[in-house]
Structures are given as structure tokens and as C-alpha cells.
Length: 248
Image 1: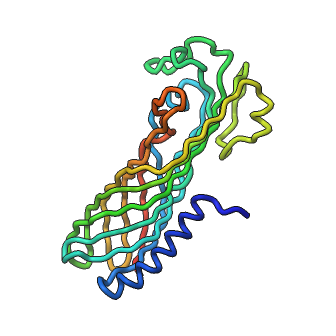
Image 2: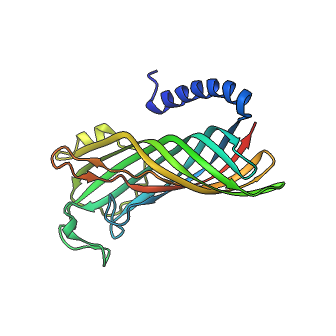
Image 3: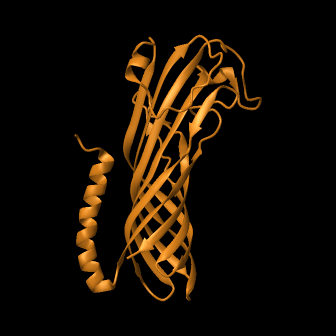
């Protein structure tokens, strides 16, 4: 089985983490932290890969995981270096072929409503977050953190034209069936994949080795189109992640 890009990322990070842990724990008392939680994506809004006035289904919530190192800088400051996987988001929608045929203010189709484009897409984000945390002292600690987020995102979309959407009930399916799309002439497929620099900020409440955090990841960089070099955005512009972590 051919390993995925995300799989290679985690294998590489685990190898680097193992080496860093041996050095850092001896020199600076660093600890390993692991975490799991839920990521909720925030979309770019009505009109970007879905239209609220037309049939659509969005998958914006997914599982998130963390593996990293943390250590104290002083009594009130700590650092975190975390590999995170923010999961998969997706869309399954029917949209007007031309943006001008849909009203954002009225949230309804204006023209060519009997011939809508069916869009199916999904995206995935993973990367490394490096943050500096300022926190209180005591058995219960409250902290705020922020820093850069170097991430890899992939977003793919496929579309085809159909003549009717009567009785539409299709939920998001996690992707598109190639045979399904090849049977629809005039369809398009577009995929954007690459590394970007974003940011992350959040709050943490810790007690002993356990901590509950809420982080906001800004990870919605667009990708240039070959013909115009204008960026086209993914479905999301940011993700909010609630996570429970444990330090070893």
C-alpha cells in the first residue's frame, strides 16, 4: 500500500520528535504531549462552493489529533511544538453555473435554475504549530498562546451539469466516484495542494498533566489558477479546535 502524504508527514515528525525528545529532556526537561479533540471549520460563506438558497450539505466537523513537545521557559511561560492533524471537511452542493444567477442578499436562484452545477469536494489540513504560552501559577493554570502554523492543505472539487434537482437528498459522501463524474460530459475537476504559513492562537486550562485547550487555526490560503494567477479559495478560511491533551 502506498503511504499517503499525511502518513509520511506523521512518520517523519515522529522520527524527529524521538530525536528531539532525547536531547531536550536531558537539557531542558521537555515533555511529550498528546491530544485528541474536535475541529470545526469556518467556511468562506454563502457563494463559495455552496449556495444557501440551493440544496447543499456541508461536513465541517472532524476529529483532530496532536503529538508534540512542551517545556517551561519560566514560571509563567511555556513553549509548545506540536504536529496536528485537523481532519477532513467537505461539501456536496447544487449551484448556479454563473455567480450572477444567484442572489447573495435574497439567497435564491435568479436564472438558469433548471440547470445547476453539482459540486462535490473535500479538503484536509495537517501541519506544525509552534506557540509561546503565558499562564498563571498554581494547581490550576490558565494560559493564552499564539504562534505560527506551518501547514499542508489539500482541497479538491469536481462538478458536472444536470438538468434537475427535484427530490435532492444526497448527503456529503466524502468524495466523488470517478465513474459517476465521467458519465457526465462537461464536468470539471480541480485540486489544490501545498504548504503554507498561517497562524494559531488559543486558551488553555491545565491541571496536573491534563489540559483542555481551544485553538483557532488560520489555514485557508488560496491557490493560484494557472490561467489567471488569481487565487481560488478552499471551502474554509479557519478552523476552531477543542482538544484534551496529556503530558508524559
